[in-house]
Structures are given as C-alpha cells and as structure tokens.
Amino acid sequence: MHVHMVGNGVAGSGGWLRLGGWHRWLAGFMVRQIGFPASVLTQDLESIYAAHLLDLIRRSSFDAAVLLAHERVYDSDGTVREDLGSMYVPNDVVLELAATHPEFLAGVSIHPARSDALEELDRCLERGAVLMKCLPNCQNIDCSDPRYRPFWERMAAAGLPLLVHTGGENTVPVVNGRLADPKFLRAPLECGGTVIAAHCATKSGLGDPDYFADWVRLLAEFPNLYGDNSAMVSLNRSAHLRDCLLPEIFGRALHGSDFPVPVLGHRLWLTGSLGWSEFRRCQRLDNPVERDWMFKQALGFPEDTRTRAASLLRLG
Image (cartoon, rainbow, N blue to C red; front, side, top):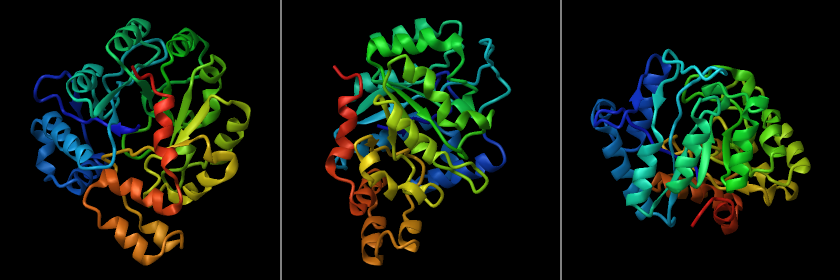
C-alpha cells in the first residue's frame, strides 16, 4: 500500500525529475539497488520503471500495490513553487497505469491549497483513486490549516484514505521540517477520514525528532488513525519496527514498502532482532518487494498486517 511511481517526463507525461547534490547521489544509489545503471535517470524512466515494478509484483506473493503519484510544492495561498521540489509525478500517470494493469492501484497526490483541489479530487475519485498521499514537510502542507477542512471532509465523505508522511525525510528535499509532526493530523482525523501515518512517525536522519510516541498517543485518541511500516526495514528507520508488534499498536499497523527505497535489514541483525541465518535468508532474496515483507514476517508480523489495508482502501 505504499510504492512510489517515479519518472522524468521524457515521454511527455508532464512530470519531471530535478536532482542535485545529495539527492542526485541517492537517486543513483536507489536505481542501482534495483538493478539499473544510473543512466536510466535520463532515459524513459516512467516506462522502464513501471515495467520493472510490474514484473516484481507478479513475481511476489502480492496481488497488487498502491502506486503513488507525487505532487508539486505550493504556498498556502495556492501558488505553485516552481523553484522547489525534486520530482513531480502527475496523477494521470498512476491513474492510467492502474487502468491498464490490475497489479497497480492508484494513489493520487493533491495539494489542498490548489485552487482546483476539490475538482481534482473529484476527478481522481471518478477515475478510481484508492487513496491520497501527501508529504507535508516536503510539499508544504499544514494539515491543520482551516482552509483545508472542506478538502478533508470531501475525502472522508468519499471514503478515500489519507496516507500522509510523518517523521523525517531524506529522499526528497524538506521545505518545512516542523510539518513532519503527526500532531498536525488532528484536523483530517476530526473530519472523520481514515488517516495512515506513513513510517509511523519515525526519524529518518540522526538529527530528526522521533515522533513515534506522539503517534502512539494519537492512536489511543483516534480510532480512524493507522500507521504503515514502510521503509522501516532500513538502516535509519528500523528502531521502532518491533514496537509495532506491541498490543496497543499491532491492530493499527499496516504493511507498506516505500519501494524503490532500498530494503537493508542489516541493523535488525546488528541489534539482535534477527539471527544471522534469518538475516541472510531474507537479504538474499532478489525481489526487494518480497524481501521487505519477508523481513517483517521473520520479526513476527502476521499475514493480516499486509491484508488489513484492503479494508481501508477505496476499492470497487
């Protein structure tokens, strides 16, 4: 329920990829991790990546993956910030892929400050969107802004879940770091919609605040709040992965991937969460989509962790 679509717009999708510094190196590392040379970043990345991902899903134990678009950065008054952001994947890219391949489900991305936000939301609902994803700290979305309440209310009325990034971020540039705090999710939660805190509000970098405990406190207050364990089989986010098996959390935890973020379970072995043989068994799997789940299964996550999302997504 958390797989990223990436592209560069070379084939005319309208999307773009603008990488510099650390993010250029990281993008090269990620594409090499999934078996491509860094030069793929200048080719028809959307077509190459989508075909590869489709093959990975078909060779895995999963039926389908929610494929996520990526919105541009906007000011709170609805002005698009052409000077900010490192990538843009239009909603039509994932909507069209989902219409063509049953292995893909469309996760759209809409900034609620857009002047046409409600119209775009209705358009995406009509075309089969199963959830809406945003990254508040990277796309400059203060979810508590009262101007956005009609947007959250429309999502809630339509049964469209909100998958929202929480915690630190290194893969794309951060615009406003304080918006990584899950406490900003109160407004969409109060509007009655299903909200899924991506990464369970864990830290990404050494200097990031750890909001995991804040997310756990919100779970007790809002029955419509969940969290996904995407990217938590990694060197930087795995500290709280086993905590998601605690009784007060377990029933609200969903499996997420965060592909193409690399699946590196080394820290799970180094901290004693997994033995050497179990670590090697999982790490040797050549399919990163399946490898991510196998690590979580080895830690004790049962099957309903990865099927629970089906009861929350806007399917059918």
